[in-house]
Image (cartoon, rainbow over the protein chains, first blue to last red):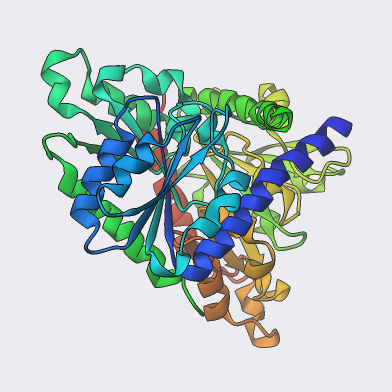
Length: 224
Length: 224
């Protein structure tokens, strides 16, 4: 019984703060996306190209999560979008409190969409609710098509999977059909977007989906 | 740092077992639904009527979760469906380990759908992944239309909300439009079914949705 009580309290800790974050976002009508992947799958590059295509239709801000460094924030700032950096000082994922403690750095009244780029890690980030509307994960073709079987929680918890770096498909051994089939075994609702942020192939379909999610969120949330 | 590590390990505890449960279900092609509500919202009655309507198309088994007693299991057994009881011995919710430890009591090779009726509670059950495909919650019209604002995590985490006991609408002060609007502020993808298991009104739409989920699950999972 003691174990169950302790577990409940600690789970409730992150979840309660996530719920507070979510209430803030919902009160402002902001759609929030938690973007996750292993290291180097192309999260920041995807965001740069996404902002180029959607930045005129929607006011997007980005929270960059990294163990250390502000490199990614600076890449986003160069696109003209708003961005702040959270350094986790060693932690391998963001949690709801880290987000909560940095929200004052963003003018929430002037944005439609907040994208949180999590720490590059296919394991722990999947388990921490930040208060987002959607978790989206990236799997790059260079990582291999066996990842759904190895990281089931990430694939199960994601609303959408982006298969990135498709321009490299001719040079790697990646079976797209197998990767998608194995991912949908874990999550039969998973949306899938295969794209190359480098060449632009497939970007439009992803951006349209994102625009639809922002629009749907705004139609149900915001000032009462 | 220590706090973060402890939290991570404990969260991972339930989540890891839930993932194991999910792998078992997905390997067998079984759709799993975690049914939650406050006490007396009509979970067992809904299940009895659902089994009457869908029990010939799908092989359904039910796990009944209660703090104590086997009353609900006996009600399900009377419909002809398979059912087992988990007594939580005081705990206010089911967790993944409780499910795991009782799975041997069910012949998983002979079912299409497992419905887990959680302990009557609008708070804690929402936070514990059992390895299900969908969380579905019931809000009865007799409980009042203010519940989304009071129990945001449950409404946020559910795939679908059933508004039950609609036959009592003429006798209670329940604003359906407000309840649905407030619930979708928390979860803009929420499916909503208003029904009365007693009169049968609205049951067909709910049963068709459930059949669609079972079918979609089976098309992606099962033996490789």
